[in-house]
Amino acid sequence: MLRAGDVSSAEERAVAAYLGLAIGDALGATVEFLTPNEIRHQYGRHEDIRGGGWLKLKAGQVTDDTTMSLAVGRSILDRGRVEAGAVARALDDWMRSKPVDIGNTVRRNLIAFRRTGNPEAPASEHDAGNGAAMRVLPVALAYFRRPEEDIAAAVRAQGHVTHHNDQSDAASLTVVLLVQDLMGGITDVEMLRERIQALVYVHPAFDPRGKRRENPSGYVVETMQAVFQAFFDTNSFEECLIDVVNRGGDADTTGAIAGMLAGARYGLSAIPSRWLKALEPRVCEACKTQARALVASDYAQGLSSPRGNSTYKNDSSG
Image (cartoon, rainbow, N blue to C red):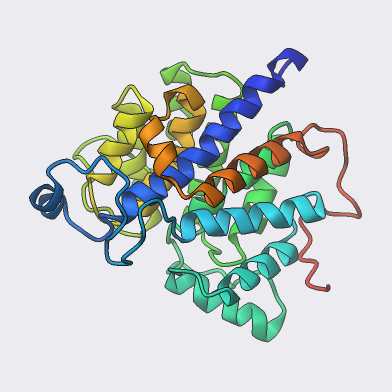
């Protein structure tokens, strides 16, 4: 647990993580679904937020990675904690707003929620996509000072709305714990690697050692291999994001997750001003505001306890 004097540092890293998510999303969206060779042919080294891509975005516009995260964060702030029912309703509202992009697994399970009112998707070995991990940052911020068992339960509740899968759960929890480690001031690379080693011990497929993961798909294992390699093999926020998005594939999501981690690791001062200026102002402000609110919440501060028997009950009622 942080000392009182460390709160401002934790808040600053939280804001940097949220901005990192949005910047990585906007940067990677341009080259999403391209191969590294196609990126080199079109851009040389892709390193500017320029929009375009298969979604034909405006420069600085973000995709579902950021907008779903903001929806999850709003549900947490509204309820004071993670509730599966509240998350499901927030994501359903988000889907009704006609977002620029939505994954097939997310769409299918949110439609099922509309039909049944059950905010927990059925367990499926086929739902090991990266859609839960890419929107998990608000959980990391809101549960910053909570016990790890509370954090893990919140991660599952949030993720199972659309992705009820062991690999998705494991990746999402690892992302949350890494962000929290970094918010708490841990910068020792070997200590951070221990999180990855713990993940790989249970789920060997995530092992990032070996061949460079290029053209990663939406499969959460490939996503995290690319993110871990970029995060640990670079020494700045800028190089981490440039490295990961130039691998191509699901580049908006690898960019978003790497951005969370790199933002929390290097802080606000390390984010290039050209990227901050290019980000859509409304999104930039929403990320900063929500990051501060989540870290400052009573639940994040450890000042409130779960209501009722379980913080993570489905609560599918209004």
